[in-house]
Image 1 (cartoon, rainbow, N blue to C red):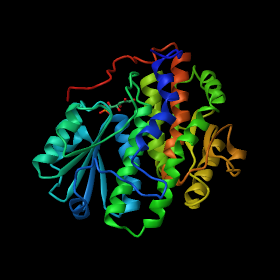
Image 2 (cartoon, rainbow, N blue to C red; image 1 turned 45 degrees about the vertical axis):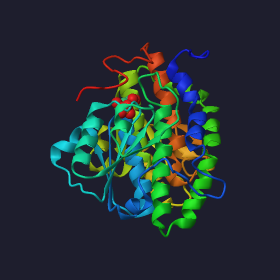
Image 3 (cartoon, rainbow, N blue to C red; image 1 turned 30 degrees about the horizontal axis):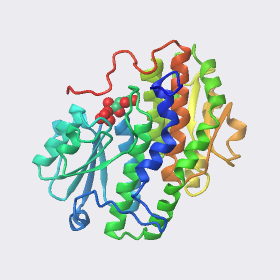
Length: 369
Ligand code: F6R
């Protein structure tokens, strides 16, 4: 069943290029157009939407945080992202013009289910992004966009996360397409970039041996920090979550711009800090700011583990360890930048003698609130 891999998690990490390609299949075409007929919410209703609210838990919530950047950029519709467990308890403002997107691999997460029930009671339309055919969350939603990751067995979510990102991009681009935003040309370009992205994920997987080696060398550490900006911030949160649940280490993700507002006090000699660096092309201001952050923490003794795009030379002098990922448009970078963090957590867990597929105290699907 594990197809020669020691753990399901390793197999599922390796399946990501296919999972990503399968989730795009039949939904985009070479001319840069999307066809999401399965989203049965009529275009006239989508054109009237004045707010998107995403609800999800854990790793799926991180996919939602990334989706917010894409949705707001491509559609100019305001988007909120909320932990499903908090949602209905704060009496959220929802009406017929709100589109609620519920993201869940299993389709059975009780917190997410209760959030979507609450949303529908208030008259909102609910679109589910789900990996499990016929599960409760898609059954109770107005529409569903299935991710095609195939069954995910390891408790820690990997390939489902990448396909949730793909589905979120599709929803964002589709909303942009239906609403005819001024980003029409950019939308067509991104659709083409998406069609090549599974090859980029494959290339990342081929270069992971140094990441494994590095992980093994850090097995005795107590703490690892993760920093990112823009869509790299949720990637940092996801890297930290993976490390907590698999390696049982203290791990925290921060927005790099927040460092100076407190977390920089945590930096001490030889503390490993993973930094997700945005592309130097496009939003280059962000890139330059994060390079300064890397310098700041390194001056205070941090051991910097830098995830940066191929060809980004500015980071080289400040990286104790450099992990290269293929160049992608900024908004799509999480699809490649998350993969080394998954491999890192998995290898650290193994080195610490932990049960990779079944971490302590966790269950694959959380059916209690
Ligand atoms: C972490 C992980 C969990 C799930 C969360 C939501 O690796 O797997 O954080 O992402 O419990 O689960 P679903 O997506 O099934 O609703």
